Image (cartoon, rainbow, N blue to C red; front, side, top):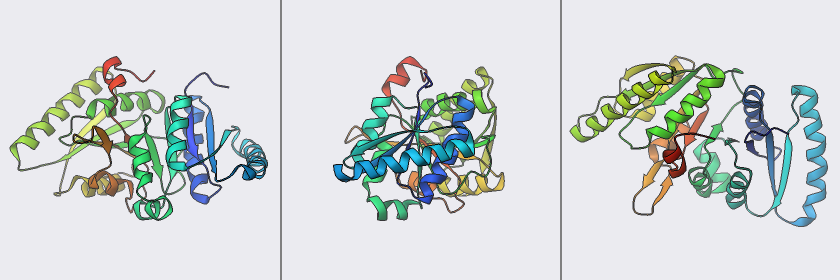
Length: 273
C-alpha cells in the first residue's frame, strides 16, 4: 500500500464510474498512489453481494491495467459518506463520473454539488473515458475571486508529475473593480508559476462569459482538463458551486473538470502535504 494520500472514486458499477476509474488509474500510475473505490449500500444485507462483486472487479482491473484498486463499502448516503471517507483517508482528490449537471441532479439532487463543493479535497468530474493518458494541457480560467492560490498549488503539483502546460485565460470586463481583481490574480499566477518553473501562457479570450469562453478554448486546444475553484458564500461561510462553475462542469465538450475548494490549512502552510 502506498504511503501517499489516495484517490477516491465513488463507485456504483455504472459505465460512468468506470470512466472515472480509468482517469484515476492514469493519474495513480504516475503519482504512485492507491485508489479506493467507495461503494455505498442502502442496507447491511447488501454487503456480501457488493463485496463479492468488488473483489472480482478489482482483480479484473489488475489484469487489465496492472493496478489493483482497494475498496470501501459503507451503508448510508452518498451525500455524507463520500466526504467522510475523503476526510478519513486524507485523500488527495476524488474522481467522479457524471452526465453533467442535469444528470447529477436527476441522480442525486442538488446535494451532489454540495458534496463536491463541501469536500476538503478537490473533485475531478468526468463525463467520458480519458482521451489521453496525460495531463499536458490544462485550461486555468482566471476571474476576480480571491481563491487562486489553491489552484496554483494544484497546478504546481500536477505539473511536477505530468510536465503540464497551464493556459491562464481571462476575458475583458468593463467593471473597474473586477478588472483590477482579475489583473491582480493574473500577476499572482504569473509570479507563482514562474518561480515554480511551471510552463504557462496567458490568453485573453473573446466573449462575455468566462465559462463559455474557457470551454470553447479548451476544445480548440484539445485540453486534457479545466481547473476551476469554488465560490465562497460569505453569508454561510462555506463554499458553493455557482452558475459559472456548474456550467463548466457540465460542459458539452465533456472536458474533465477539476474543482478546487479553498482551504485555510493549505493557505497557511502553502503546501499539499
